[in-house]
Length: 256
Image 1 (tube, helix red, strand yellow):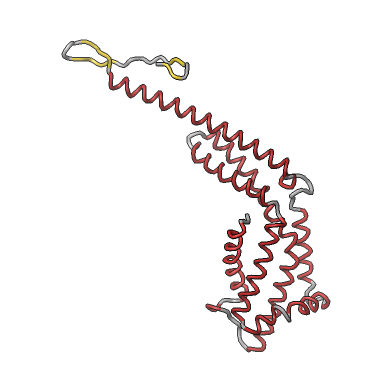
Image 2 (cartoon, rainbow, N blue to C red; image 1 turned 180 degrees about the horizontal axis):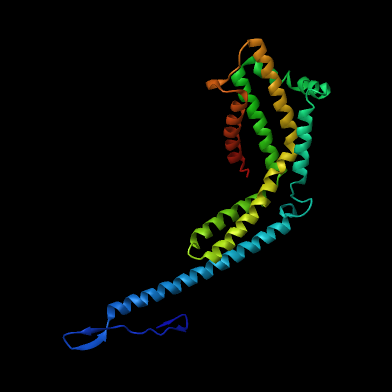
């Protein structure tokens, strides 16, 4: 049998024929053997094709990293340093909220007549508007403050590697190689996507401290715990609707 200029020798199976009292070629067994060989060769071709596709994708990632240096894991480029620093500053400000009246009073001076006005007008609807505005601003920061093109490439690569892992289940060595590649992409994706925290960490902390002050004061005036729709606390209300609004806005603006 000849396939792609390669010759394969097949040992013809035989079976005993009682009628002729001779061993004759077993055509059925031969046909099965030919089919098995064809399947093996087709599988080898598929593996080779997938290997070439993986190599092409790796080259594409290298080209993306050259175009977008921030996605490369280098000191000062796409690292966690700035993010951690800004989070520490935000936590420091939060801890000084009651110790430094200047911080607290400045935030109340800005938010009392804006967000406070909306909450005083209608607690549930006002809170809904405030949450939407905050989520809108953070989505804009995520879209324009991060390298969306590089993030999309990394997300696409993660998806393709996951698909390849399903196809190479029967090849442990290749599966381990793909898993290593997948793990290497995770920190890069986190560094890029979390970069927006550097711009929003401090405003977020200040807003949440203001929320806390507002609802503590509201409970003192009401003489009982203040609840929003379905008996939710302000934090649970914020978290739930921030997730809903965030999902809608990200899909609308194609934000990763």
